[in-house]
Length: 534
Image 1 (tube, rainbow, N blue to C red):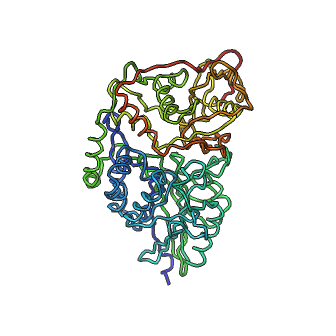
Image 2 (cartoon, one colour):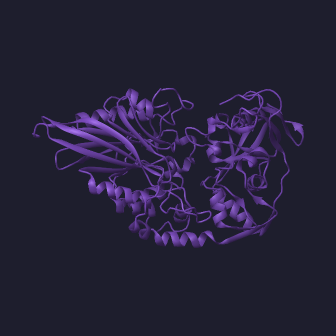
Image 3 (cartoon, one colour):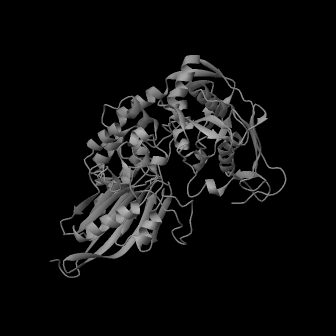
């Protein structure tokens, strides 16, 4: 029996979408950056010193994303995973797998899990019998004062749309909402917990205040639905969208801490004893910034050898560019074909045997290639561990995909072409704007959405809408990722299991010198009429 009116405070700290970021610098140019787990570690240790009861939870996309993470996965994978070493050092209480946890295959993920001194939770990823695939749907943390916290793990069920099927073989991706409904009730009734925390690698599909949809309503992000339709959730820790969010939705405290360790989520619950249970009296949500924080020395030391090996590997020479493949203006590189984009597409065509290719400039930090190319240049520009697929699609599919990609642009008040808010919020999606080789086309941003492709030819002959063509693209796009639903369930002609970054490196190593060329087979214009607006 608890003493009447006894009070206590529970602090929950959350990281998410760290994407292999430990060190606070850029791998492209060594410049310092206000991010990384080493900085957040200092904030976590501060909170541990002052909190009565504390939980620290990671919400996924932990072990992929930086050259350090790539080097470990592909070259030094027999060593312990550096991200896991850091979470162990900081005393994390739980972690949830994100979609990028699967990028290097199940054996690599399961090794990382086996090295963890904390449980990995995922209730909605099950085996064929409905049992949690990774062994644990939830955990219960019981404190000395009797406070019992139930933590349920959930992962976006949209992963099969993106991931290499071999990397998720045997896993059933069940609906997070229905799964949460079962396990929340179980924790309340069977485990008699005082507080239910749902840690979800997924985000909010609706605005936290208005409830209006903020993106196409698929099953990729269902955080708002979890709050609105599952009774008994007290705290929802979210991720995946890379948003910075601290809010309350239908009484549920919600945080999402961005990505790459720029922020940590913080939820504070004030509780009061009532008979044999604790009741929540107040919820507070906030974000803790890494900006201006001195990185934790012990974490830097823990990962120092991994970093040194990575930096040495990154500076290995690969080949030489004759001409100019530097990107100085990312918008300009998306408005008119750039030699760097043509290079990637031509490598994809040559390596796959397809006649048509598409690729993207993944983010605005991509700098292209200088004259002398190193592995640092490769992995800094091609940041995802994608592989290639050749699909058999129709001319209509290609046109539909080009109309989808044309939505990346809008016209501003002065008639200038700008990036549409649709591709900037709730997070930047530059990787969902594709540029094509092997066809000729023009995007006219002055025309309405869905009517922007003015001509579409192959070898200067009109593309036949009913005819079939072989197109090479990365596996994310081939699965329909980025709302390219026209590619879902299309026949796969060929697959290349080698990562595209490795294909680019191999191409340069074999040829030693590559000329920067551009055939200007596409362009973006704004001629006549008005754009669609945001």
